[in-house]
Image 1 (cartoon, helix red, strand yellow):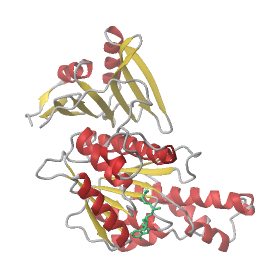
Image 2 (cartoon, rainbow, N blue to C red):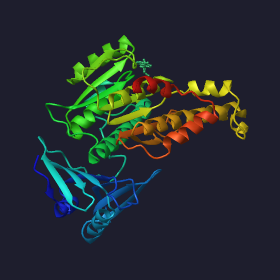
Image 3 (cartoon, rainbow, N blue to C red):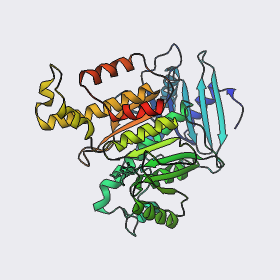
Image 4 (cartoon, rainbow, N blue to C red):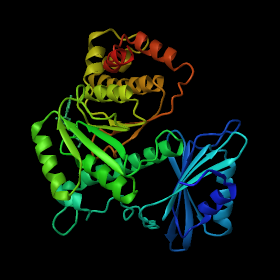
Length: 401
Ligand SMILES: C[S@@+](CC[C@H](N)C(=O)[O-])C[C@H]1O[C@@H](n2cnc3c(N)ncnc32)[C@H](O)[C@@H]1O
């Protein structure tokens, strides 16, 4: 890694280098500035009309994409992005990565690290072809999603789409955490520690390891935890077949013992309050990145059935189906608030489209250490009015004490 230098011109040049830029992510805000977007991602794409800089800008709820032709168009777009006032940038280039922090006085501090192995620059525009892990990746055959011809079996297409969506969210969250300085740069000697709690057959565990390790070139160490012995045996056998050094342990989420605290905690479709257990472990470990896709929500639903609904919200719980939906929403809203109170920046986003599965939300959280004003008071009023005792709150009491 080079010493930091004032790199305003270098940052601009690296963003405009359409031959080597893999992608750039900017986020955060410099003191005294108010970027219009929470985060932007930029990459070059080859369209019929020539090469363009594609900028995807994220506000709190959705993504907006615009393409700017290389030349004056991309230069104007880059200058506009640089003027937004983002605090941090992370650039992946073919042979290097750049971490950039812009100080409150506008100084651009740029650290550059050479990659051990160059990575390919993908400029394919077609989203269908923009696979994060291609269908012929060996993991899909080993997991039974693809046939010997390297094509995804029609019956497993929904699972493959789920894997792709998960990787998109994981990729964006890890990049954002790294750009914000909340996640360290892993090395071959000290890889990024990832744990998948309630890993089941480890589709997403293996996908995370393959994608971050081979596509993003990040050294990673992956552990899967599941209460079922059969899951450990199956996954260990698949890992051996694939030549991956992933580890699988039998244990409960609440009690799993890991050699070192993980930095990325995954909990995907862990049943009911197992998601709360996973979130509590993440807080206990002070994990910088957490991705949790909740499964069924019984705990708050049962509490709503037992306690009278506060006025004037009776209509929200009168009908069973609406009460169940409200319980789902309350459960995840309360989880998000509790994580925010622990210093996490949290987004609750759609995981997969709802026609594929009703279990389609994801909590993605980055530990920034900042606790927003008033979040505790709002939470107290919410659970007080509805007489709720969220499982995560109970679990966090023992983490805090
Ligand atoms: C619905 S599967 C999801 C598997 C995988 N994460 C996925 O999304 O494909 C839930 C898994 O979590 C495991 N599980 C549920 N509660 C658990 C707990 N408290 N501790 C450890 N594993 C648990 C189950 O054995 C099961 O394999």
